[in-house]
Image (cartoon, rainbow, N blue to C red; front, side, top):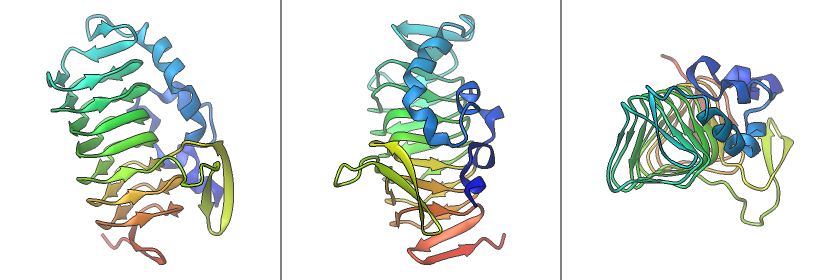
Length: 223
C-alpha cells in the first residue's frame, strides 16, 4: 500500500522543473528540506532569454505576470505564463511551474507547484507539493505544523509512517481538487484525481480517484 503514496505514483515529473530533485526520493515530502538549495542551483542554469533574474535568487519568466502589489522573497522561480496576483505573498523556497495561478492574498512557503496548479484565492500552501493541475478552492489551506509541535506522520490504513519533519503540509497528486475552506492537516496525501468536499478537515491519505466527503466517508469517483 505504501506504493500509493510514492512520488512516482502521485506525480507526473514531466510537469515540473523540480523533477531532478523529486526523482531522488521515494516519497515527495523527502524533498522539502532541499527545495531552497535546489532553486538556487537551478536558477543559475535557466535561459536568460526565458527568465529574468529580478533579485538575488529570484528568477521570473518573462511571460509571467506579477502584479505590483505581490511580494516575492528568494529563493524562488516563477514559471512561464504564470500569474502572481494582487497581494500574493511568496515567502521563499517556492518553485512555481508554468501556467499557474498564485492568487490574491495567497501565501506560499517552501513549496513546489507543478505546471498548471491553481491556488487562486486566499490560500496558504506551506511545506507542500502540489501536482500537475491540482486546484485549491478559495480559502483552502495546508496546515503544516501539528498543535503539539511533534514530528509529522503520514497515516495510511491505520499505519503511521514517520516523516522526520516538524513542518510538512500536504502532497496533492495530479488533478487533485480541494474544496473551498478545507483544511489539509499536517501529513495529508491527496491521491491523483481525488476530490475533497468543501469545508472538510482532512487527515491521512485520500486514495486516487476518490471523493472525501467527511472522515470515514470516502467514496470512489464514478465518472
